Structure formats: C-alpha cells, structure tokens
Image (tube, rainbow, N blue to C red; front, top):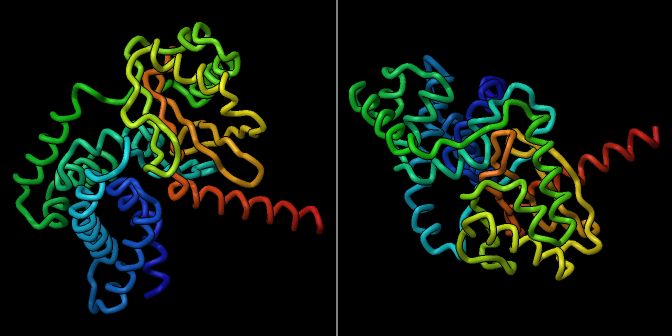
Length: 294
C-alpha cells in the first residue's frame, strides 16, 4: 500500500499544486489523501482513486481559500517552487503566469481544465472524478477555455530566450534609470508584488511600461538591492531570480515573455511563500558541503 501511494505521489502533487497554487497546501492535501488511502479497501484503480480524492480535497480547500484571498493584503501570487532538473514537467502549465490566470476560474472549471488540458484525461474520467455527467465535464472545460481565451500567457520559444530577456531586464534595472528598463518591457506590461502585508510593496498591480520601469528604477536608487546576492534558478518551469541577503531569501522575481519583450513581472516577497525555497537551498548547500568533505 505505501509503495502504491508513492508511485502516484508526484502526479497527485502536480494536480494539487496547480489547483491551489501553494506547495504547502498541496502537501497538506497529500497528507490527508494518504490518511484516506490507508483506510481504503479493495481499490480497483489506485491512480483514479487518488486523483479523485486529491481533486475533491482541493475543491474543498478552494472554498475557504476564496475567502482568505479576498482578505489578502495586496496582490496574491502562487507560491514559487524550484523545478530545476525536473525535465518531465510541463513548463507552460506550471508557470507563474498560467497559475495566476487559473485564479479567474471557478474551482470546478479549474479542475476540468487541468484534468483535461494538462493531465489529458478523457471527459468520462473527468466526470467520474468531479461526480457529474460527461456533458457537464465538457461544459466546464469549454467554459474555462472561454474565460481564458483572451488572456493566455505568452511563452518564449525556449528557456534560453526566456533567460536572455530576464537577464536583460536585470541588467537594465541595475542602471537605476527608467529608459533601459522600458526598452525591454511591453507597453501594457503588468507587475504584481505579493508581500501579503508582511513587507512593503505595492498594494495593487502596477500597469504600463512607464510605471513599471519607474518602480524598479526607484527601488534601485533607494538601495533596495544593496548588499544582496542574486541567484538565477529555474522556478515554475522557467528561469527566475532569487535575491538573497545573507542566508535570508528576500524575494523571487519571474517574468512572462514571448522571447522578444516582457509582458508580466511577478515578485514574491511574502516570507511564508519563500520558506520552502530557503529550506531547499539549505539542503543543497548541506549536500554540497558533505560531498566536498568526502
């Protein structure tokens, strides 16, 4: 039984994280799914059982999450996760831009879209998971697509081109002058800063090339990055920036780009959402020291 659960754990986490936008909440869901799995008997299809259990737990979680996010201080962004070295993941369906867009959908629409588009389940399977008819599953999927049709995220043709735009943005920002920053931004660029009321940040998304450029130029001129150590690392499937002050992770910064210009900037400053990345970095450092010692 434990081995069977572990065999499906990665897929269950993938569903839960995309549904909830939080690695911590996804792990809580997996813990509850494990408890239910322990009490299950005569399960004909473990994969279907666990996918159904995880999806239902996420739907329940999203009901309370809606209330929490309405009370959230400032813009809400998904919790960034480290995906370096995970070649099997789909970078588009786990990107910060896509997860943020999912917030516009109802929980059932979100589940239908993910199960069909990302995990490639048949409508009859989705209906069984959601507890409805095949026609209802089709309708939920198509309604979700309609809601997202006008604002699909844009992706660079390769991670190398994404990295080039990210480094161009960082180089421009380091000048402390708006002009070079504006040169890499789209006219209608948006910047979200998620601090959750724990750090100083804009309480609304900043819209437009001039305002976003002025924001980052102002931060640099005020010494906002003074003494900090930047690290480029893959987060949510794409190259991103981690900014460290000693052993403390100050923020993560990711972009949405088509490889030519930047349409979105996502900055996560909420310490709660950076905790897992800090712990993962410490484990990497510990393993490196252990290897060097050997």
